[in-house]
Image (tube, rainbow, N blue to C red; front, top):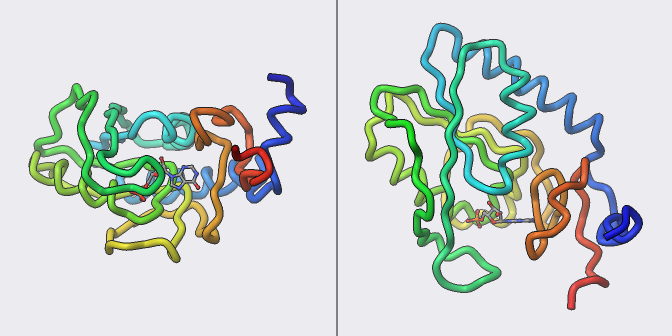
Length: 183
Ligand code: IMP
């Protein structure tokens, strides 16, 4: 795929690279001050959160560890059912740890809500969420997100970790999917 083909998937740039990086640095400052003297463990959900995690973690000035889990949704392919299966679990035990879940996007909130219930049962000292993007209009279940990068409208977005059919994660910005390429 050429750069032009990659970019033709984008209908409109929603959040450009400098805007993303500035906001991530702000989140890093806020999280570093909130977790000073704590035992921070960042938990990412594969695969979308990898790109945000890499930049966010490098913007932190407090000691921290990282771990990842992989999950898959049961039910309809496009809309989240909220019932998830753990494909790869965490390596690090959560008991007594200050855990921050790092998410790419919270849409209906169903996946995150299930995940939070699962992680809370492992008895962490604290459990919070940092999401790069959230679509408040799509929320079906209340889920507290302490740190939010950007609130976005109800559009399907790609880039900076977010995919459409596993592609376009490598765009450096967040763009709205060009509906003309959808089969
Ligand atoms: P939820 O359970 O509806 O909140 O779904 C969250 C998951 O759906 C995210 O972690 C993404 O993998 C996926 N998702 C939701 N909206 C988008 C989008 O606009 N672009 C790409 N993936 C999305």
